[in-house]
Amino acid sequence: MTANPPPALYVTGTDTGIGKTFASCVLLHALRRQGGRAVGMKPVASGCELTADGLRNEDATALLAASDPRPAYADLNPYALPLPLAPELAAAEAGVSLALAPIEAAFARLRAQADTVVVEGVGGWLAPLSGTLDQDDLVKALRLPVVMVVGLRLGCLNHARLTAAAIAASGATCIGWIGNEVDPQMARIDDNMALLRARLAMPCLGRLPFAPGADPAGLADCLRLQEA
Image 1: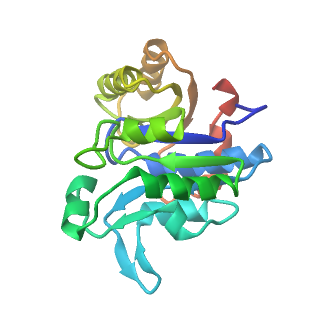
Image 2: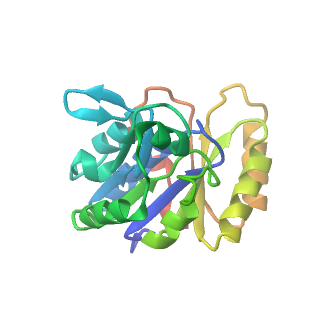
């Protein structure tokens, strides 16, 4: 990825709450250190708060802060849903019907501004976007390679292998994985990383430390994008 970063990436995770947004922000900074422009995208976000500027999502605003250039919020997060529920439920409560076309249009505008767009998914890989739309539909429509964030905690081997198998079964291509330390008390974390490296077919792009509140820019060197 060093010489020729892909025009866009899709970041998925082994579960909800394993640090996809944090990893995506670090990834944005790492891509820019290679000399390119990189912006984030959160196509669907639930749990948005009403602000003076409209509905805003914490993950989406973190991606916005890590983006350069800074895109319009509505392009970065075309579907902002108020309730902190699964997107299908949050959209139904908001009276919104999720569709690919608005996401594709927003993505095209982001692509026109940047060398790479980092698109963050929702929850884990098989979390649906709507009753008729899965995340792999979005990945196929936008032709995105996938980066998998593995939450390093007890059970990560099972979750990582299941997620990798599901990505492959859908026909998408996973170009690498990032280990993210979400449990500071995890026993034998180095050994678990070694087991993950041995059992996942795609390369490890790096390991992010447990660092609540850390500036993602300061962790860009933790990722080795040349491995992809």
